[in-house]
Length: 132
Image (cartoon, rainbow, N blue to C red; front, side):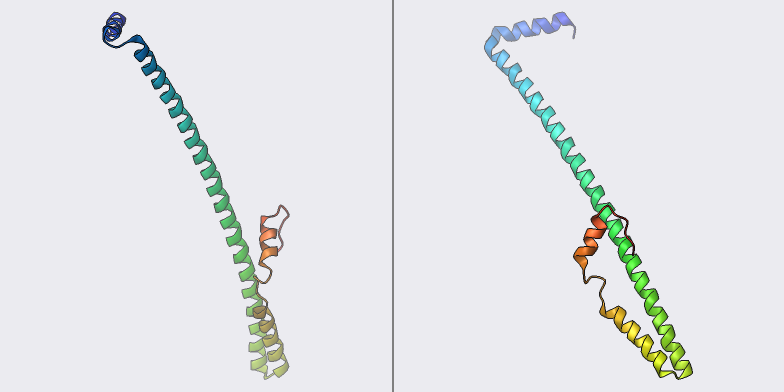
């Protein structure tokens, strides 16, 4: 449709519909367009906020998982060494060696790594390097 055809159609509409109604219609269309753009911006902002929050959750999950793995690997290694003492004590019939090994295992398993979970969480959330 060329320009002259478009103008003719507008004139035809103007003959049937009062010009105030046409202006009100176009005003409404423009307002809807503005609202649509605002909605799209709000959706983009919400999606960006969601993406940032998900990345923070993923990062924290990875950090906590690594920390827990290190903590329990360390405990596992320490427990294994105490069982080696117990095994040596059994081989040698050394009651004192067996007792030291059992006491070591008991100390490790009686002290939960979750005993001070609040301090652990603060350390994991803080900016300082963590030594485990």
